[in-house]
Length: 258
Image 1 (tube, rainbow, N blue to C red):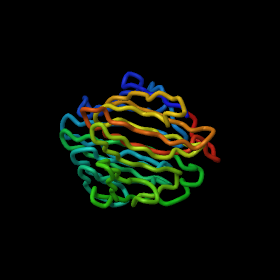
Image 2: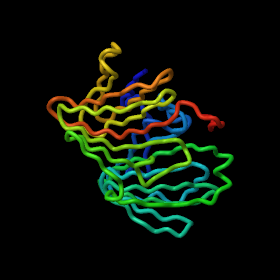
Image 3: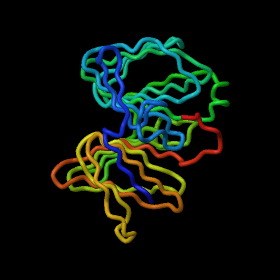
């Protein structure tokens, strides 16, 4: 198992308008300067924050599966498919952009959201009609054990299922508590620390000391040779919140060159 932490200084930056929306990008677009260019078919990940209400005007997408996940606030959506929607804290929008569509997004003041692009086999998905779906926070199944809350966003236990091989969870760990889950061989966890600080590590008998990560850090954990258990531990005096995506390290189709 390999663990690497990328601080905000190693992530790309972006903005819209005159800085009404600012972005940290754990995975940026080509030439934006993020140290991480992709994690398997996980193509792009931006953490956007709006300083005032601002609309990103209509712009095109095709092929990619694009998730907008609202950490706090309100995101409006309109597109050329005829959708005019609004999603609030804890909700998500998913566009499987297929053969192409235009959409616009309006972030309310003080909104924070993730926009994440997953890359399926583009030569195939661009032949499909585009779709849009939206889910409120209450529609995502949540499990709680020993105080740890796990919200399932993408995958078999969640309402969102993508063509791209992927899982996504929003995990809240109380102070001093830990959460462990399996990382299959040939897969990676891509993790953004949303709140707090904590450590990431494998079983102690493996001789791997835990790695520390703080708010805003991007952590990539890969299991190339064998399935392993990964433990996320909150510090003793404060809770830890992470958003975790699991994707394969390699896929059996060509990926967009970055």
